[in-house]
Image 1 (cartoon, rainbow, N blue to C red):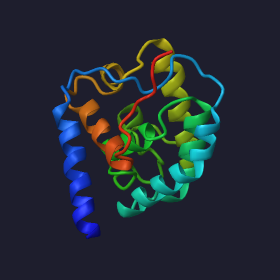
Image 2 (cartoon, rainbow, N blue to C red):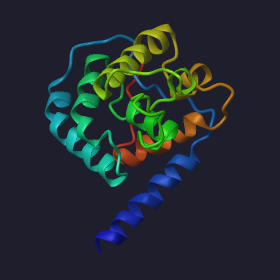
Image 3 (tube, helix red, strand yellow):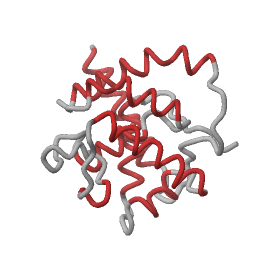
Length: 176
């Protein structure tokens, strides 16, 4: 029964992902950092558990850092699934990286070395906010143009993993 439900969820998620036009614009953050709502604070535990279990299912070395992903997403007011999804696209969730680089995000084409997983999560989250979103790249497609040019599929792949991390509801933060 559980497998049937999971298969149905996967099928629906896949349809949702692939039914969307590649060029569709989806905001990944609000246009300016705001106060956290009670709903986000209440969701913190479930988001952390959801993300940790998802990363564990992929045997990811990032699984123990699920809480840090959530914290940094909240601090920088970005979708909590975004940075882990980028790690999925760029390094199979941290499994395919240059040795001891903690660079699961393809940062500087994989050449950058971070000091720790925590450091990498914070730097990437902060940079996405300050150098991408705050400068007008408020959707996956707009971020992709700067983050992964000339890829025509990067945004679609990131969107796919975001939906896989938490399929329902499929929502992206609305632009301010």
